[in-house]
Length: 335
Image (cartoon, rainbow, N blue to C red):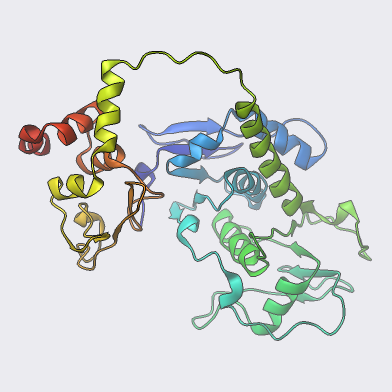
């Protein structure tokens, strides 16, 4: 399991715990708009987060309130994936969970159209209401899975603790998954009855927030593509050396790091201490673009430079020297 110190960037919001020393932090603080979605999006824009930030390990530091689901939903929408969270003193590794909710069997598609359903909380008048629990055999009963999966709109009454609220939210979103996780409405505890089709008072539409955040990410990308093209600058000797190191076959780099392989594309991870079994069964896959990834240690595929930086705890310049100057291999490891 990861520790907070394993992350590069921490995203905070109002009431979040402080980031630990050595980790960069960004604040996503909602604006003052009365519309919750508009206020959250204003906070996301003001945060300065970019798509490039999510190429490294990112964690959301959740305040101790189920309202943490609102900025978390925006963060997942902007990232285009689940983001790990820290709540109740625990790192929740949501990014490594199986994204497919089909693993949970349901009781079959309901005979008629189910406009609304509710998960959690007391029974809602005129609305199928189900619960999820933490039983030893399964988290979701088939009857509950049917309501969660097939309701056109699902309202979620979250548990009181941020940790349980986040875990329930991720589970519900996975069960409702189509091409992506599909987020529920978040109950505010003030919903009127009877419920109607598009009543905005039925909670915070977290799926709408996810889509708005994803749209903002696309806007940033379009803005970058439309930037003025300037004449290229000559490549400095320093950058040329970095480029040469990146071009070295990552298999050679793995060998220098003490890794071995019985298969050309599957290697033992050079960070065996991070594996419970010392990576006895190889978990490091090499890809055709000269990058590699350990599914335990790496959030994404990494090239030769980033691999050496993480394994040896050195700077990119030192990593380049390690890769290009084999005489320094022993010295770098013992430094």
